[in-house]
Image 1 (tube, one colour):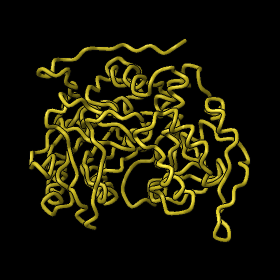
Image 2 (cartoon, rainbow, N blue to C red):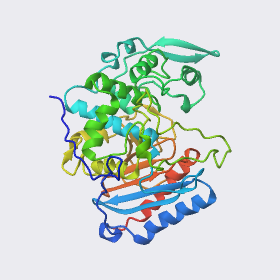
Image 3 (cartoon, one colour):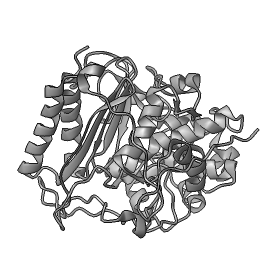
Image 4 (spheres, rainbow, N blue to C red):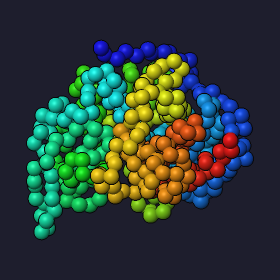
Amino acid sequence: MARTATVKKTPAHKKNGFVTPALPRGKPESVGLSSSRLRQISSVLKREIDKGTMPGAVVMVGRRGKVAHFNALGVQDPATQAPMRHDSVFRVFSMTKPITSVAVMQLVEDGRILIGDPVSKYFPAFARVQVGVPRDGKLHLVPAEREITIQDLLRHTSGLVTHTTGSGPVQTLYAEAGISARTRTNNENAELLATMPLYCQPGAEWKYSRSTDLLGSIIEVVSGQTLGGYLTEHIFAPLLMTDTGFYIAKDRAENRLAEAFAHDPWTGEKVSHWSMTEKPALEAGGGGLVATAMDYARFAQMLVNGGTLNGERIIGRKTLAWMTSDHLGPSVKVDSPLIPPGHGFGLGFAVRLKPGMAQFPGSVGKYYWGGRAGTQFWIDPKENLFALLMVQAPGQREYLRVLIRNLVYAAVES
């Protein structure tokens, strides 16, 4: 039976549609957090803004069902010097991936997908993919030893890649082909991906890739809807995420668009991002969404709650536990800064497996992901906590990810 969704209207947002309802607020000490340490988060971020690390930021920390810290700092757009707003809109890039992954698992719960399904069930051209093997200065093609599965796409072991992960011959082919260009449809992009050589044999290695873009295309095939239409009906509308989508209409943008510096403050390189108000042909399941902090916080709180928010069940509790367990094990090669020591990867999320080893604190079972422009979030089930940082600072993202984790966990008292 097809999944159904209850769509609730929210209070009017001036003259332009609806506003995302706020999550409940709570005093820090009432949820076991330190007020002074939470203030330190803002002080440190302000220091970074004053140093020119980033234009501005929105930071939020929620615990035990209450938002204990929610602050907007710096400027929203360095070109206009408009101050950052709590409802500023950000490109969340790869923070699209967990949302798309939840959507896939909804279809698993509905009995319409099995994660062991071969991708060729949905796009037959993937039955004939080959693996690119660099040798003697040339790229040799060999047959794939097995087909790519839905699980491979969810856990990034498909052998697909992206041109941003290196400059090898396969990545170069991706760049030359313009994989995931916003002018192609999801179906066209999937068919193009099927013509590209794999970076490695399916299941052999964790490699950050276009896998989740392909998952978005599969959602369209299975549901008969556009990816944006499916996500809106089954995730955004039930969660009242009113400003989340693959673009935001100009009349809703209302001078709320967060932008990066024109040039990276550390390298001087030009920074170029796509327009948030331009509707793309490609609704990229791996990196195409825009959202506000409160919108994404509602998704995060749903995850903290085990898949539900305000009476709306988005994903089953056991399905979510399955997603946030390690799916790599010892047999899959992992050599990426995106999977730190002591971590593995589940179905759409990085997952902490050990209390030590990583260069930042956190509990075993914590899961998370981030975006190319510096946005990040994490869920810590043991601490009943989520944290969210919204920035547009692509060159500083790794530094900021470690910095904010240290600051948030320093605020946990009881």
